[in-house]
Image (cartoon, rainbow, N blue to C red; front, side, top):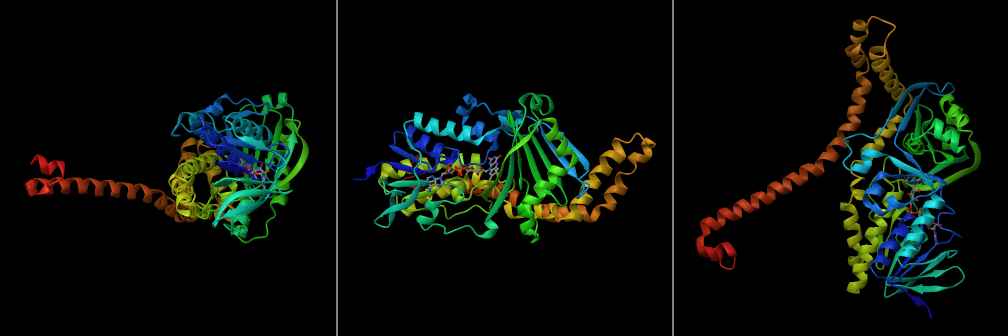
Length: 478
Ligand SMILES: Cc1cc2nc3c(=O)[nH]c(=O)nc-3n(C[C@H](O)[C@H](O)[C@H](O)COP(=O)(O)OP(=O)(O)OC[C@H]3O[C@@H](n4cnc5c(N)ncnc54)[C@H](O)[C@@H]3O)c2cc1C
């Protein structure tokens, strides 16, 4: 007979392990199924865990992994087009003091290896009481009275539960088997190329220290990232919209080609040399990358979290915190469904409603417009002009020791006037982002005004209506 659980979670990535941990901590009997030998084995090598994760999952602060390097500085390299790939502007910065939570004012991310991180999170789920089964590939779903009621493994093992959480990544079998989604549309998914390097820890400490993220941007190369762990470097493709830009521009840009071009840029090549980086693996991964919050993420007895749901955010395609956050929300809804003995479509819908209101859902506000900004970043003329304008404003004015200072300073207005067309183009794209962003705030204010209006009109009605209030406390008092 099939073994029974309260909850089955498919996939022990960040989304699945957090879902399993949350549910097990609430006393549920949880089965966490992972196809690999160890969690994280098949995932991308290096990544950056955002400070948001430390804010929302404070227990992560005790996590210590050998590959960790805290990123307190970010460096942006703005390059001229290939073949020169000359460094035109370089921005080096710590976090902004305006960030709304303390961890965000201290650091950007912590870089580490996924295989260590995923194993750590799965260990947390097991410590909370979840049962982890590795080498367990889910190939089928059990259905009962029109809803998902369990899973089938390759080899025929069957497990049952009133709720199944699909945390099985970009190519989610659960999404397909549950009939939620057959496959991604071409404009919903990107292919990311990366190169994984070993590097000397000592050199990294000297050369990189805590400036563990370098972005390389420029016409012809889009955007690529260079992130450093304790002893390794991870160089990746469309961190800032390479494939996305090429897709939007409908140009035949090849992310792999652009990644190789970036390595040729003197600033990138020298960094790799300086830290004794030796390539050890070429990787390519699929990543869902939507500009709107997906809504087809649940069904009777089933919810999708993380990449399986398509939750990486619309600008950087950051997805680990999103997976963790959605995993926790889905587990909370699963717990309610099991308590109420109701895993119907309506019951699972609570997951979507809560996710839409959460920071994960709100990150999609203005997503389409932000994509349009990226479209401009991919435009060689536009991007080149903006970079040169930055050079002019900064170097031909403030950093200018070559000319008479007053004459250099007087360039401000002419530089702005010359670049008016390109600035207006930025405004044309940015204005709708602002409108989208503020419309929520305006709506909230209107709601508040409506609420206040209702209270005041209620009070006025009570004052005028005297004893007519009947059952209302105000009426009784009068
Ligand atoms: C190159 C690259 C770089 C990235 N860098 C960052 C970054 O720096 N920061 C960041 O926040 N995000 C980053 N992301 C995004 C991030 O990797 C994903 O959003 C995140 O891994 C999603 O987590 P998840 O738990 O939903 O899915 P996954 O991490 O994909 O985990 C899914 C798990 O399910 C298992 N599985 C799959 N199918 C089955 C099955 N049928 N049965 C059983 N198990 C199954 C898999 O083996 C895997 O362990 C990057 C992505 C890529 C591709």
